Length: 205
Image (tube, rainbow, N blue to C red; front, side):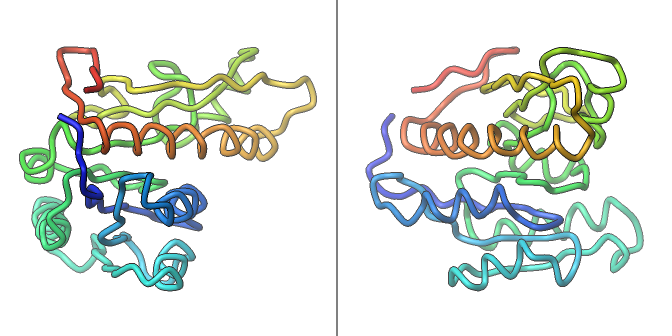
């Protein structure tokens, strides 16, 4: 089913928010079909929150240390997100693993962009691990989050050649340059056209 009204999404961040900025910019165009209803973070004072505030988007912070355990934090995060009634939730550099409560509420509707070509190099050091392994192609993967670590069904991937003189920083930055347009393209497409997850396959429309 094709959506005719902008689809509300919540974006989760932990840092500078460059992926978020790409989505904020895209959402300025009504034809994009997405309304960023809120931006949440797991820490105070990050640039990602400032980007949202400058764009007039509501923000919230849900810190793990403010709760007695991860399950309580996961419940609180779920409740924060639910306040904005999103159809999709997007992790754009959000460095916390969500738990069972969150996945019950948003399983199949929670997207994450990872800076490696999954299933290779999951975890928070994708570009470093790719360099250390000596691969010739790195890249980025957009996937539907499940209970594993970077194990969900893959939506899209883009490849980034590894140069002989690459460092972790230079490779990470070049991956981001490819990751941003991929995220924008596919979040918009999934929001506008809808999608289903069938096993390991994501079908649009």
